[in-house]
Length: 123
Image (tube, rainbow, N blue to C red; front, side, top):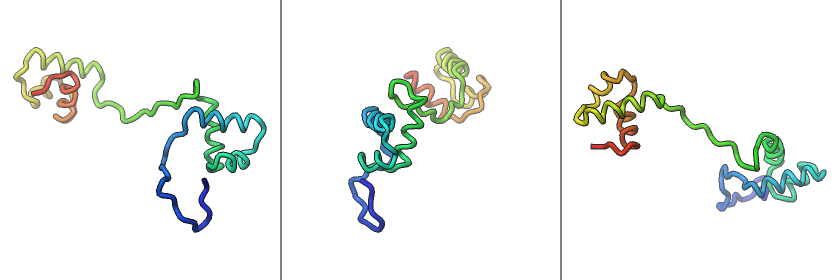
């Protein structure tokens, strides 16, 4: 529901919640059926900009699924990760500084620790 100017803010409001495929389908169907975004806004109780955004997004969505978020890129390539794991498996007593010099990767020891932890190789 849209808040009136200077009206109370509901504590039940959820910030940045993604609409379900069903909700997006209802909104897109209403627009496709000939309703204006302002009428859909009043009907569903959401902002008109959200209605317009959902209609723009439906064009590139496949099977009503959201596009996956990219996230931060990895510091090491899969090849470098495999090389680190191979060196550690050959010499299980190697320390982090020697491992970094031997593999010639420019990352922190925490990154190496995380890679080894994902493989189940931790001290």
